Length: 382
Image 1 (cartoon, rainbow, N blue to C red):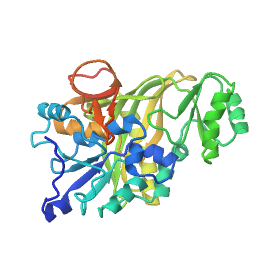
Image 2: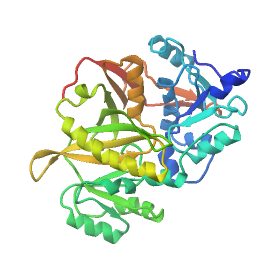
Image 3: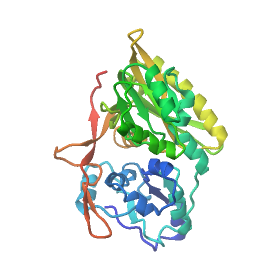
Image 4: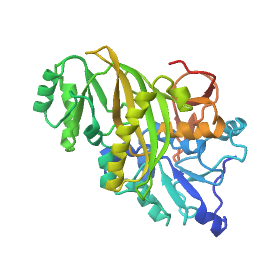
């Protein structure tokens, strides 16, 4: 059973313990770079409060996960009953604790000045790339450097937007530089600029950020590769995943397995993507960035040739990702099989790998609508 960390832990164990913080709000920190308290930022939206428990799926038994509130005991018991944690679940500790974190090493979901400030107040070890570099790399304006779409453009003004909309026929998509899981995207069907769409763009322009415009693609499949850049600029391959998104590009689930299982007919596309990714990763390492990286790609039907084409670098995520969580969980529970990790709103019964609810420090009960489920697949149909 996960328990609060014990302040009486001996010094040697304390110095070697790892504290995980799933600050999945990092995109909002990049977009709104005021340094507010970590607890306040995580509490801004319910989804961040739910996702803060993700490290339970991959942290070591002796690790600690810092959270804003503790979940129900029946949720933790249900996790243990899966049999996936034979050595016991990691520990949980409250973010507001001041004493039991001292001297420990802090690992965050993404680079964060909020986490840095929180860790410094507790005399913890926390290493993070320069904030300006991290912000630059996580922006879609940086990913645009490696785009293969001739019709894509960075749009800095109303005039530029109108001109681009006239030049690019058919359906199009506008993306903010920072947006979580498709949340910063707007699809448009024609070249008419509504006041609502203009307002969406102006919010970004006021922050001195461009809007990324791309033609709408007939998506045939999405995948990602996960990497790690070490502080000595060494680039490590972690693995590839395929993931499911809805019609708006919002994440639905991740498929994990061997490359032969995931990419039986797509190996040339995967290798082409890896070459694009390595170029970008090498440049990021030279800039001084380090840590986990997820790079998204997709296959689409080229309307000119009616053939399958690769968009090799759609987005760079300089942070941990749900695909990385899926890879780690698969290695824990089904290393030789395929696994599907799905995060969806559903009324279906059954256990979720994330809490259904928590009770915050004010005593308010916060319910979560989405469930995170893992299933082992016998086969996968393209």
